[in-house]
Image 1 (spheres, helix red, strand yellow):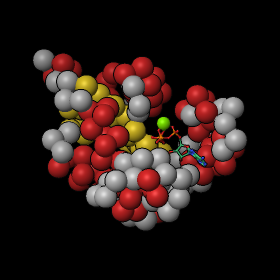
Image 2 (spheres, helix red, strand yellow; image 1 turned 120 degrees about the vertical axis):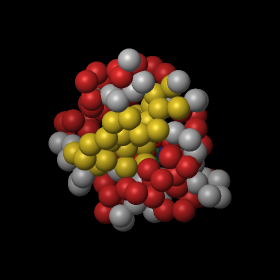
Image 3 (cartoon, helix red, strand yellow; image 1 turned 45 degrees about the vertical axis):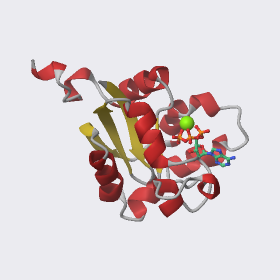
Image 4 (tube, protein in one colour; image 1 turned 45 degrees about the horizontal axis):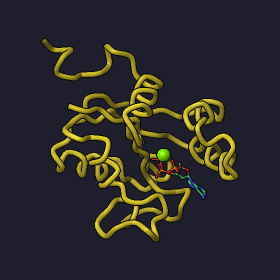
Amino acid sequence: MEKTLSIVKPDGTTKNLIGEVLRRFEGANLRVIALKMINLSKSEAEAFYSVHKDKPFFSSLTDFMSSGPCVVTVVEGESAISKVREIMGATNPDEAAEGTIRKDYASDIERNIVHGSDSLESASFEINYFFNALELNDRNSRD
Ligand code: ATP
Ligand code: MG
């Protein structure tokens, strides 16, 4: 079982897509094992996306991510990292496959509704950034 971190970004919560995003994950046999709604500060968004700190879009991205509420979730399942990324679609909605969240709802390459961890390493960093062990309702914690 793999865990990944996903975020319904501020454009997603504004467009009433929280349920739609979670429905797509659940429909793909993934399980939501932790969830919260938070308003990131600019500096919290910067720390979360620090891998992009030298990119030209960093300032705009972190302004956007701190512009409204995010729903942050931990999703568990077989190949959860790649499954969530497949359901999300490509970063740029113009390049996203039909039937993906970003193809259906993203307005541009920045405002693309949803985030998903891109590797085991980033999933571990990102899950720990938002949740402590007691907040993860995974199978092991119930044994
Ligand atoms: P995410 O990390 O949010 O799941 P991703 O892995 O598909 O998305 P990244 O390359 O990690 O894409 O970029 C992180 C986020 O930065 C993107 O989701 C998007 O919101 C924003 N972004 C990426 N590239 C650009 C760009 N060229 N211009 C503006 N914003 C961008
Ligand atoms: Mg990424």
